[in-house]
Image 1 (tube, rainbow, N blue to C red):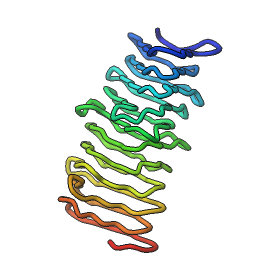
Image 2: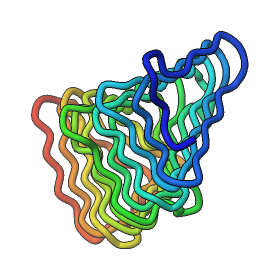
Image 3: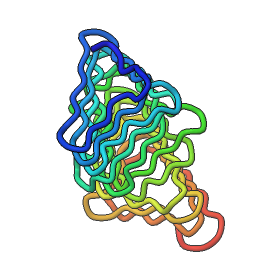
Length: 231
């Protein structure tokens, strides 16, 4: 299958949905599953603007086959609360759309198999419980995201995360000696225990404090806090 087209796309009330292509997989219509897992793969992924891949309570797994993954302003939706709620892997560049998985984990890259930059398309947002991943390039998630927990993440490029909620760092975040920029526009930024940041310049911006008690290793630190709390 090279594309998901037609008037109604794909809808199922039972069972998993698996769509694969030997070439570019184009998602031009909605895909909906009540509680089955959704698996999409191709030599590149292209999701049309305003389309929705909705797995219900199932997981969403996307493998770009070492091609580019372009999600435009499409949406990935699941109520799954597990560690594999949404996984995007095996890609060159990744341009994210909207991701609605507020109970589950978003994984960007497995074993550094995203080789290019990960970015967000304009006006889109990520709403997930936990963010984790492994890439070989930069991560720029600078839009109005809701990511309360940043777990283990490795990149070989600068890492930027803008959050509209407080951010708790619970795993080791390493950028291969590149910059880290973390922003909470409404709350605090914290790390402790296994939470640790490793990179060059660390820049933070918070409203109710930044407290970094983990085993952080950065070459320089620039912090801004606007209302209350400590830095």
